[in-house]
Image (cartoon, rainbow, N blue to C red):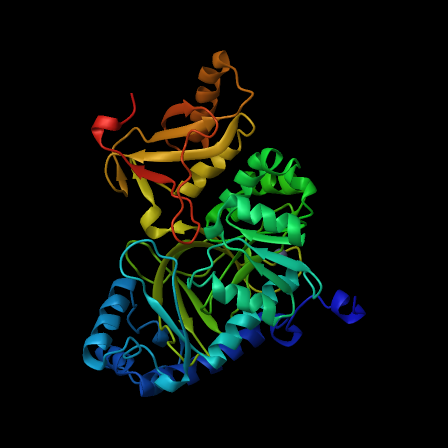
Length: 462
Ligand SMILES: [Zn+2]
């Protein structure tokens, strides 16, 4: 292998190694230019500025910038519809570039409502590809390595656009996709022998359980040395990471970012310290309070709803856009030495449940259940009488016990899990234990496993 490649730790050394101060300066320059561009090229953004009594020249500080209103997904949908009605195409209003410059429309992985569209020019596609390159290069992948892509291969931002990015940086991509089913993914794993696998953590766990019966091999003998988690919070959950690490004998990376400007990847060691935010030169990140929607201070450990603004972006540049993800950020320097802030995605704001005043995310329950592996398989469902966030106590869970758990041990196991959740999550759940493989793993179009099931009283738990 090329010696320089081997030793070069970062894809874009000039940008990725910048000090915080240098980066802030670059961001500010980019933001000012972008705001002017947005204002001049979008009717919608002009109205937003005017509504706040501002023109781009008035914005002289970050506080001024935060006076611009937030844009929610609901509003984005409305604007898309309005563009279709007024212009007969979805580009209008938010999209700033001329139509002939748009080369890609992709969509978020959202599971509810009408999809919201991202529009990209050739320049924007190159930005996205650069971000993928930054992530996989940091992980240690180099040309010559084979990556099997087992997420959804649809137009969603982590689908086909991701495969493009992998190829653009010079890695070999095997875009199998989860649509073909587990057997097909396994066939191509055996046929192409990738060193890296990109999948949902749930699929990884499933493969660990199923590999012996499907391939005659343990998952750790499949040759996977990099496992990239995406589309679910699992890659940031300690117990899930540990299972995947042992199960595949691979380094586990949590990473995020698709056809837009917000991208991150963790440094991939055993002690997870969140994902490094690797695209600050194209995205301004803010946190807002989930209830008051007021900007929060970006201090170490802060938890809030993510707001992003694209900079150096031509197609549909989002401006103070609320995506719905809840982030926890870390600002203390990371032991790996890479600069910048880190974050964990705790879940989507609309996944949050409130039980007796305690906020809880399905990812926290997943962590708790996985801590009891192999006494549990890690597969579970949260059963709700009605859609959240408010849950009438007790919180009902149905989870699979491991194959080696004897009947007389089940009651104790149930009590252990309950005690753990009471001590660490401050909820007192009602637990139903069921055998291995008896919970149907349902996924949405993006491969995300549905952890919540709405039950009616007639087929509820006994
Ligand atoms: Zn790090």
